[in-house]
Image (cartoon, rainbow, N blue to C red):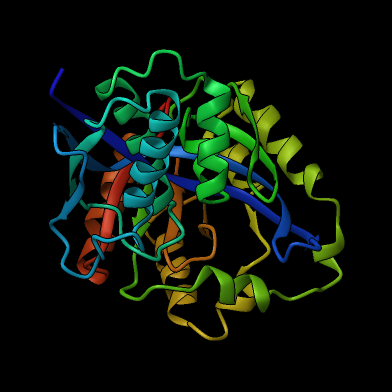
Length: 299
């Protein structure tokens, strides 16, 4: 195998509770991650010169070691060379077609990194590399990367590295809006508001929502349990997010919420037909709109 193509799906945070800051500077979270059909596309081609080359259709995205997908390739190459020191052909050209907005709270960079880890493992025939090895490599790259190794729906805790896959048999339908600006994840976490509501145990929200997902309950049941602790920090600085939320509700969404640290906002709709109808309305107001549905696995 000299070339393969792989999809890197976006995620939504259906719940996101911030439980406190850790000694290492990260924050403990309690969140439900849910993969959706919006995705980046990666083509991985082997190189015999041992180099890692990243190409991208978005000129705003760096293609050096400041890019998470590039760092994922370097990380896996270093692991491969430790196991096979005599082999010097662990090289690849990574062609990334970016569809997931950057700095949008949808996990695009982390999903790309996980896709590179999974794809290069196949391309370089690293059959001896275990899921635990990949998970460790993923955790070294970023908090969200381990989730994207499997995707689907998961209960995510710790700083994001503790991932427990959960059953979610029903397909849900969403309209997403990227309002045209990124939000720094580090800034959002640093400035999140510690209100009384924020002190409520995070697992309460996740547990209820995951139970509804597991039972295949309708979108209206899921919509009652959406929560994001970062909204009170981000919305005052970016009030456009509040307008997007209101417009999604007017377009028929059962609930609307910022995903992750923003800036993207999603609306959860009753079914595919209502989501399509809502998308036709929203896309006329907000050009950066996407129609999406649940996907059962991340890759």
